[in-house]
Image (spheres, rainbow, N blue to C red):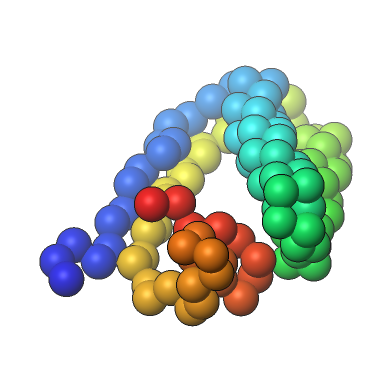
Length: 112
């Protein structure tokens, strides 16, 4: 199989602190909303609970707290934020097949 790896550069810029905080908060919030929808779908449609997704949601909520603490701890208000955010995608074999839908060990449904 060709192209089993892809790297994308999502963010690479310098931002004012309030802009950088807003960008990172929005990315985390979007990911939280996506995971909440995935969790709901798994529970409602397939009766599957995913401790992995629940733990991941908690981690992301902690990320928001960490970002807020980081911003609040800035002493020099004349600083800017350099934000680099890359996305690395690796293709991996599916672990299980269930009713034609691929479900991995974390309870995550593969999107075909």
